[in-house]
Image 1 (cartoon, one colour):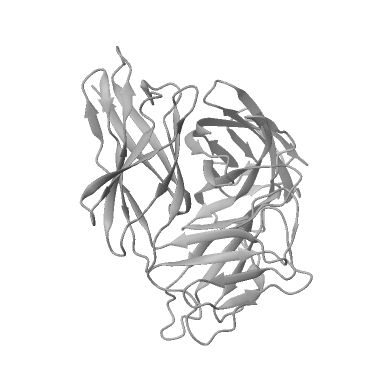
Image 2 (cartoon, one colour; image 1 turned 30 degrees about the vertical axis):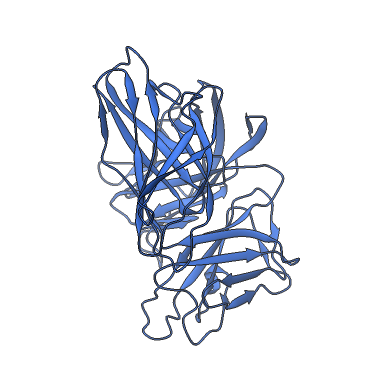
Amino acid sequence: MGIIHTSGKWTAVRPSPPQVSGLGTNHVEWGRPTGTRKSGYRFTGGETQALLTGAEFTLATFTHENFSVFSDGVQQFDVELQVNVTFEDGKTKDFTFKFHHNETDNNGPHPNDIVSLPEFISPETVTVDGQQYKVMLSGFKRGGRIVREFDSPEDGSNSADIVAVFAKPGKADVAITHVQAGGKLPGTQADEYVEIFNRGTEPADLSGWTLRARNSGKQFTFPAGTELRPGTRFRVYTNERHPETGDFSFGSGEPVWDDVADVAFLADDKGKRVSLYRYGQKITPAPPEEVKGHGEAHPRVVARNSDKQSLGTQKVVVSVPKDSPLRFHPDENTLSLWNTRQNKENKFTGTVSEDGRTLTVDVDFDIPAGDEQPIWVQLTVDSGARPGTYAVHWELGELGSVDTTVIVN
């Protein structure tokens, strides 16, 4: 999909506490302040890279300005949000969500206010390339962790990223999203875990599904009756149990996951692979390339294989923004990888989209363990291109994604 632009406005507070102001803007406030400031929410959008693969992206920054107020008995209420998304082709679409606010007693057992997401899947849909999608808020991201409930201390402004996905309506979509290898507990590494996320709009029955580690061969089977609701996550620990994330464990007295590099496999109850997660590889963007006026650009990344096995063939998608002066020419439909073992350039032929903005190619990453190799493509820079800095986005299959930069002078 590429770059999108987001903005938002708060549209309603129900039931209403006293002195609500700012409706129709990105900053809503409420309450009779005990000091000089009211409490409120702020939505800060902007440009972000969004994909249609179910990958999570940062939609905006959410800020709760939490100050002591009198709410006249209205302690819990819903704050409604309308998010406008502008796509690369100029199409715009509004999506609506609901935030639940608990204006807790500042002197009670839980003095921090609580913000949660009771309605986190937009009722609206948008059609992109003939496929319908809904926007799903997967949670608040703070300190590297995504949660559905935001605990906000008093007397300050508390912020978190709002993380979202474009979800296909009417189906579950379960994927491994993280492997936390190399636990902090010596020896057993019992605190290692795998995180599994339902990024679809329907619940998933995981009864009989299996999670397997490639290197150790250890396997976990989900018990009968296991259901993963939309927008929620389970964790499967090596040898710990945490009820708040599903209470699942391999029950292994020794490490399950390789500290350096490994592959996690998730299969359904028929043994069909549902998701694969590879970690330990590193994709590094090369320094920005400067181009004087029109001509050619050769953005590149460097791939490092830390695994014990081959990285295999991956689908690589390289894309540039629609409003940039960069494009792929139909004759420039190859991706090059420098094979350090053979000391030669390997070329892989792909397909250029009709608008010249995307190259899709299958690449055999024949990179020896512990080695790294540069990868590059050729782009045409339009004649008369306006000076500026332009992003080139790389999706490298199981190896992840990265952005590089071309500077046109």
